[in-house]
Image 1 (tube, rainbow, N blue to C red):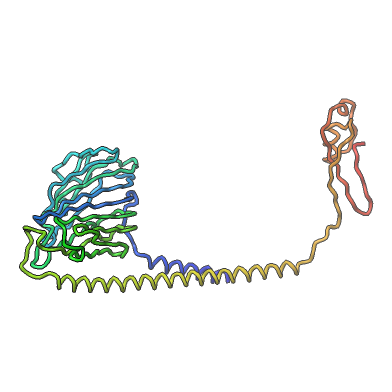
Image 2: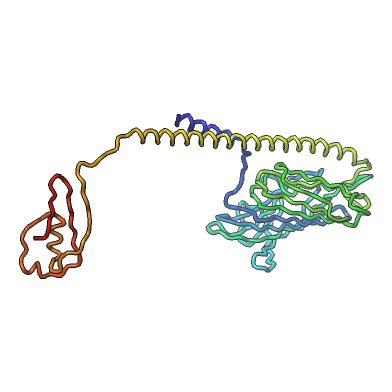
Length: 363
């Protein structure tokens, strides 16, 4: 029975573990918060500042990569990395050549060996740990596509290749000018764990939040806003955009709702299974207790063949420690005068009850 219960529990635990999504992350790094501040400009560019509050352990270099995609932007320029840990703004030294490890205080912004755009900087904590704050700033050229009916920003703030978990990710996007009302600003957020929120909080402001971000996921924002806010852009088309975007987002929203429903069902099943295991274990424990109680009741009570009473009493005033020790160890003998003259603190006596009572004394 015990083996059956054990195998059952092991099987349930294995199933629950197997249903958990696998995440790839660097255990030496953890972001307490990652905040994005983005300013959309009238020329279609976007200036971005990333604020990192990060726990670092045994790490030499931090980095972030950007997928090159001409349908989303044309170039990334004006890269800067600033250390703000001590309350100051210490601008790091730019390094023009990419390398896997960067010296502490240096940063790189450009194409890496995989032909992806990368921002990297040396932290110098390969044999140490600390919590640091950094600011990454850069400009994304042609981040906005201009259409006849709307201007569109479709930007991935965090990509799947990002290897650091984060307690919280927040972001604010400021548009070039104010819309007539917030209803003219359409927003959508995409993330795999469906654990975020996004809103147009003002006629020129969009804000989003992701809680408990897990590495290997992406965070991207899509927004449509009045096309007259953009004077010029390197990505412009003389077509309507609204219908296509609504169709895509509706399809993805339906898929997301199905995933949410599936996750809720999985949680419900897991709860039922856990409660079932608890009930089975409780029943098994009760049966085991009842069985042991019955077994104890059937056992024959053991009665001692000899009653022994232990007690302590004060010895005679002239009893010596040696005499008391002799009585205690049952070594009865004679004691000389020098032994008897030693002062005593206490003595032990044992009385045996049997057919014939015997009492041992120091004499």
